[in-house]
Length: 132
Image: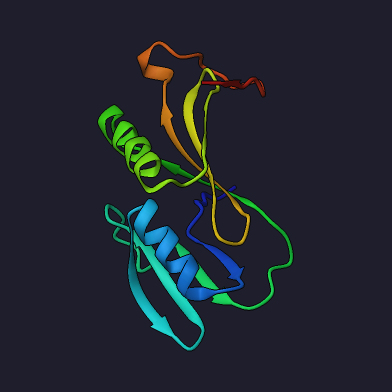
């Protein structure tokens, strides 16, 4: 067998500018390259060239993207920022993680989570979720 890891996700979005603004503003991704109707974004702590590619076109369906908050303070700051900006969201306790659930401009689910396994949370998710 061999080892792999997820390197990137490529989304087709209706309006490139709106998507770039959403991911750079609310998920703190950085624009690493832009060409034609495509933008490449990367998180600040990743040495990769990009993790998220956005190309303008007609999306074929929605997906869910998960982003990890490094600390409890970061998770709270993200909640405060989203609330201040008036962005619709919901907050869930999944036992294994606290999750801030948003939607990008194309309706894709975007989840910012705080892993709770080492903070007294459950070891496994098992599909349970409770609104906070």
